[in-house]
Image (cartoon, each protein chain N blue to C red):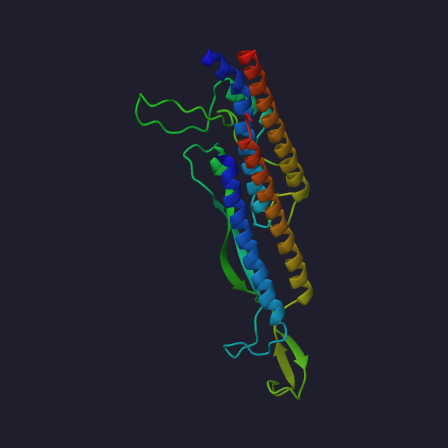
Length: 133
Length: 142
């Protein structure tokens, strides 16, 4: 029973984790908008989520003993590396952060994250309704 | 928790931009200082930014390795020549009547100031968004 509940929420949990990580990456890009030679980075959310659902988790806690519980933290899939964002217009100092792109991606990702949270809440309500009748 | 590190990343960028703004203020304030503390005309200063890895991870593809904060590595002096102004009545004028004035380019400094202020605002916005997301996360299941 609890297993099934876990399975129900796993998709949203993985998606939320990946959204949070992407938010962090884009925040780092915006923070370094004025740093010479900084290259903007991002990952492909679709392939990362597919990888996370198949159990390819690159971001892991280190377990030092065999009886440690394996952590379940979704991250970009193993084969999926962090990518470099193509520069729309090159700059003299070698920085590839385009503030318009980063800001729109940041807002886009934030909305997706919030939507994801709404889905989780609704899912919990559905489950609660099913249990309580 | 990735969203929490946004505060640290944006915070480091805000510190760096703040320092840049300080240097701009110093340059603008001293745009007409013919003599600074060492007796020479004031030289325009500039900050050097560099990105610093936020958290190191053994996995090269991990998000932690793609996350960089900002730090100011050093403050350098602008090496362009001093402005020579013809003013024989000035106490620091040389034999030909020229005074060397600071190499501060006021237009450049103003542009730098606006740029620093906008970047600072961007980082504040980012922190606010992260805060909203975190607070929203706390309401899961309510």
